[in-house]
Length: 157
Ligand SMILES: [Zn+2]
Image 1 (cartoon, helix red, strand yellow):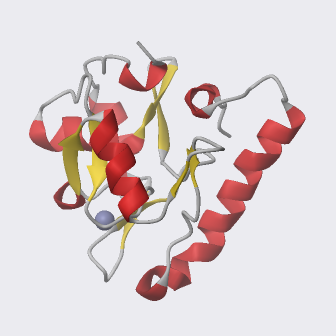
Image 2 (tube, protein in one colour; image 1 turned 30 degrees about the horizontal axis):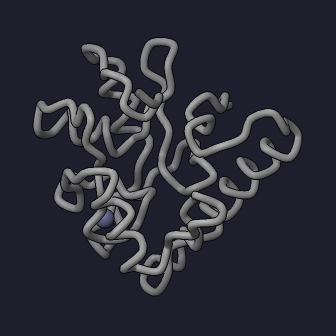
């Protein structure tokens, strides 16, 4: 199994408090992650000594369900969003279909593209862009860290 399906451990009160300190609620209804982002734009949070995708942790906190083998998808098409109301579960195939339908899927790179928020989220896009750029620089400096799953191994400061 890939690292993105790693089992979520029990969360401590401080893990949950840290989660809540890492997003900003937007007028659009989305809660945009202000912590580290993966190159594909998903929020990353460290729990224990492992990094997890923030939407999976959001789903776990609100619904009490570890997504397990399923992907956490976004109704709002904003990967950095962690509002549980924007999240729903789907399979890998659903994820690809969803991304393709929204024009975010690049089959050659096998990553999502165009993750910078648009329209009403524009005022938040500068930080996101910087974070994405930082993540991309990490890959340039660490050429062995290929593939989307290695993004979860990215260290955050
Ligand atoms: Zn959202």
